[in-house]
Image 1 (cartoon, rainbow, N blue to C red):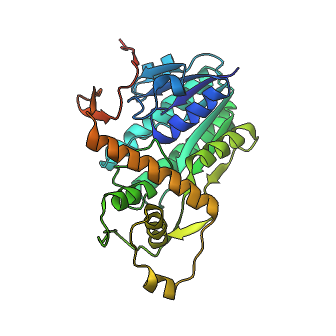
Image 2: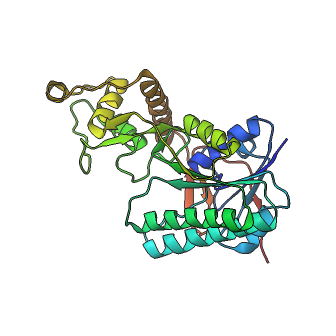
Length: 306
């Protein structure tokens, strides 16, 4: 049994990864600034520490001596570029340093498909280089996974990422026949979308390899947002006027992608049905805001750092 720490396990990909690791018989400790919105605590981990990883004392507490594996998926979501860059870099500085000090056997840093010359992209590139420098100068055994457009259930389907399959599913579910669904940007630009279970599988394969350079984890299947919307509309069995589009473009998608999209469509539909019919659970978040849950989560260990 491995001792594994998942930083950011309260998030979408982190929750699925933690669940898989726990199911395989490992001892999983999660640290995140928030509880998972959909998974019960005992589904995904043995220990859950609610903490802010920008605080080095928290990182020191969470990462113990001789941990087998650390998965660093924690990131900052903030529209303020300065806060995003500063806090994300601080987290990765804290984690990489602590992994060296505690002699962690392997650490994976979750990077992403970033845009060049964007603040978000420069932060990701800097963090990749920093983990690689710890590998070069201190022997830290690192893996770097660049994740591209991961989708699936148990994620935030109300987020404002306009081209997300989850968001389009929500729009189609809420629409009526003959409604027009508004999309932003160039809907004919191609994108790749990878189902979360496949993403987790590829992350674990990378962790077991000896490859230390950055690796792109993505689907090779490209699809436009128009095509994606058409598939989701067909899944919903609502009317869709695609004649003009089909007359001008030829396209096919694989059955696995349609199957995966069907899973998330009906999961999101169940969440919308619950929101419309059941009382919402409210959880007081660390920043004094509120987070809506569909069912009451299990109690989370709260550790106050003095």
